[in-house]
Length: 354
Ligand code: PMV
Figure (tube, rainbow, N blue to C red):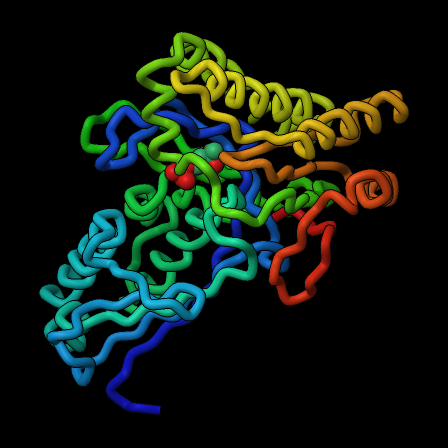
């Protein structure tokens, strides 16, 4: 290996919100209209692996570069990526000015190589894992002392939901009220170990790129949906409190009820937008009915569905019912689902949360 190349590799998992972020009050800083809460999935499920390197021998004319799934990306056209890189460089510069014995990594071009083990931009939170891994890899390369909550401020500028992927377990993104975004950060509500029975099943209904990118969809909803105003002001604040309580008490029925209602309310706001935005399809709706059937037959709530900006379903359930949940989905929906090019190539797999 080249001795003057500095390198760090890291992986970041996907997180799937149970109280959704939808709507920006500041589109440049990615400040949300409401707080949100997510479960970070296990590293064994959906994740991004990223290597960041820098070197005085990388030609300065080439500048910083990013390769995503083997393809070079044009970062100079991505304001969000540039904002993240310049914030991280500024933190490294602070370290270098305080200690002149440190190598001046902040002045070297960066090379970032990133791989997802799941379809990109298909509503599987690829941007969350992607930006979280990018931030973590460069923070490690630069040996930055900042905490995950501090770094969440930077990750948020890459993709809002990415700020929740720097920590495991149950993570809240507090919307904050400051205009500069200084109090819009992610913090852990409970570690994954708090609720070891919590499981997640990911149904890849479609591996295609989503119709309406989240930023466009959010702006349409914020500007046109009267239902959204009620969601942001009244519905979500109450649900955030109830959700944190459900997690603290490991109350699955309450957790599930809030998760499903919040997913439905978010998709109702999409439908209430002008023009309407449709993320769910027939298979998504079949998955909703199936969860309702499973819960009815069980005589209690043992499973919950949630959907992001796409048709793919994430089912949260307790370990004790994993045979029932996995078996039912495989038998009834297995043929309607697409796989992804993951390392296991499964059409349908159960993965543990956290
Ligand atoms: O982080 P973004 O800009 O890709 O937005 C994500 C929005 C949802 O996934 C639909 C909800 C969420 O809280 O993750």
